[in-house]
Length: 205
Picture 1 (cartoon, helix red, strand yellow):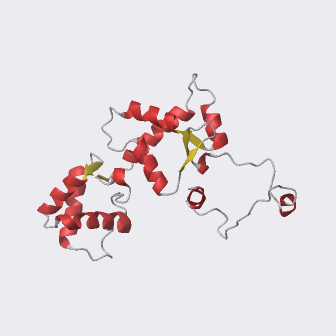
Picture 2: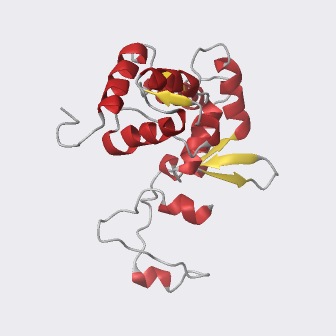
């Protein structure tokens, strides 16, 4: 159904079907496995990455982030490969952890996820067969301008993620209120009514 309106080389279509049949249940495959399978379909090695980029960008049937170095060797079919590490991080951060009762509150206040928390989750995830670990996910989120790396006052490093911040509804900002603010902030408005995805982090970075 996805390909009916898009002319596609026969070898590419066969490759896509074989790739899905061979690795869909697993959720991912390596780039080397893709190259080998593509070769059996008559696709030259030097073209394989272009084929993967095509299916990623035009149809979304696979995920291949060739421009994120730590994810360049993996082709993803199942989004759970990406969501699972994030889910584990959220469980660690916002779950009922009696040893760290302030963690979730602090993350909501600052929008920052400490590096050491990410590393802690990664250590627990080492036994997993998931080839995409949490550090890889954050490299992807940085690439997509969803998070930014920042240095805290104490010298430690954190990932800043604006979507974690709680909205400040205590005081509405009006043109009149800006007159008494020092220094006076800039206010940007967008016709869509919201800030375009990735813009804030791109400015911070």
